[in-house]
Image (cartoon, rainbow, N blue to C red):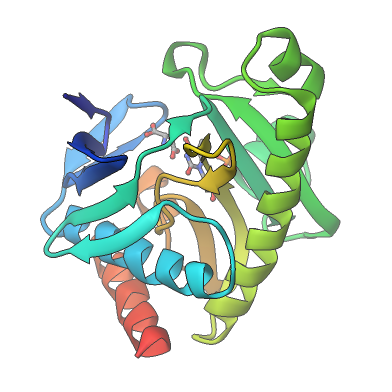
Length: 230
Ligand code: TMP
Ligand code: ASP
C-alpha cells in the first residue's frame, strides 16, 4: 500500500515502518505552479535525514530512522494529523499577506500557527477550537504540538546558525506513533524552511518568486548540513 503526495511517495514497509521516497517535483501556490528539477528529491531527502538525525540525538521524537540513498528515508509509521504547524521568528510570506509588515522584521516572540492541509481551500488557518471541533486532534494534542514545535524551532535555529544561516520560519507536520506519542514527521528542507544569509535566499522562495535556479541554493544548504553533521 502506498500514498503519493505532491513531492513524496509513502510506502508501507510493514512492522510499523514506512519508506518515504522524495520526488523531483517542486510546487507552489498549493500545486498551481509545478516543475520537476533534477536532484531535488535526493537533496531534500538527505537534508531531512541529516537534520532529523541531529534532532533525534537532541532528544526530539522524530519519525526518522535511516537514510537510504539516493532519495529514500526509512521512518516510523505515524498516524498523521492533517495539519501544518508553522513557527515564525521573522515576518514573511503569508504572515505579511495576512497582517502586513515588512519582510524580515523580527517578531517579539516565536509565533506558532496551525493550518489545515487542504489544497482546495488553500490550507485555511485554524485555532485550537477549530481543530478540536473538527475532531482533528484533542486540546491536549494541540498543546503538545505547539510546545514541540516551539522547542524544535529553537533547536533548528541553533543548528542552522552553525552554518551561518538565519532561520526565519518553518513548517512541521506531526503524527501519533503506536504508543500514542506525538512525533515529528514529514520533512525538514528548504521546501519547509525560510533560510537567509546576508540577504540571500536559500529556500523555496527562490522558486515561489522566480528568482533564479532554486537547486543551486538547495545544494548549498545540503553542503552546510553535511559540514554540520560530519
Ligand atoms: P507561509 O509564510 O507561506 O505561511 O510559510 C511559512 C513557512 O512554512 C515557510 O517556511 C514555508 C513553509 N510552508 C510549507 O512548508 N508548506 C506550505 O504549504 C506552506 C504554505 C508553507
Ligand atoms: N507547499 C505548497 C505547494 O506545494 C505551497 C508552498 O510551499 O508555497 O503548493
